[in-house]
Image 1 (spheres, rainbow, N blue to C red):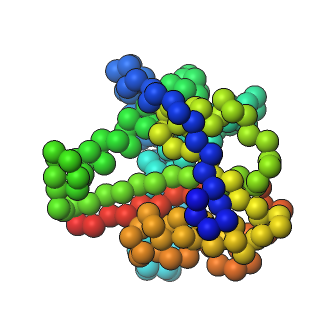
Image 2: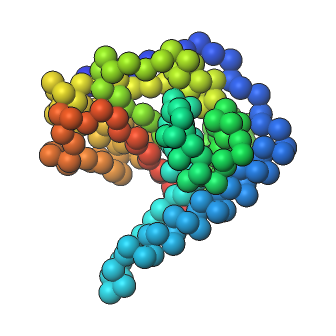
Length: 204
């Protein structure tokens, strides 16, 4: 639980690593997705703006792969097309994207046998859903099996401040306090039903 938000989880055994053919397909897809994303950011940015921009295509792709596990029909097809993985099932994509995300995390681990002090990288993704908004148990199980995470429920409709604070607290916890506010007051509304949140902590 974080503030008024609580996480729904499932006691599922982690999915086995993706086959090499799936890993290769997802690696190739990440290149295409990353180039598309960077191209869109370049087109939409102001050419006179000299500020730096930090973007993590792989963490955005992982968040979308998590969402796709609960999608169907044209929504699922649209996410797959965006991720350049239309030839793979949602479960195959999830296994592939999760495997890619685990690689830099293992190489920059600060715990266990592969002790590293620098660089340090932590990537976290979460889905915050309106409380009592129906989520299929199979989706919760898939999140646990493929990403070892759950689905957060909060109440945007009746406790917008509490929901916003919970997401901001989650962000702060996953960036070691460097980003304390992902959403400012008024950024979300009582009509919000789902928030896909991503947090990246990098120290080097």
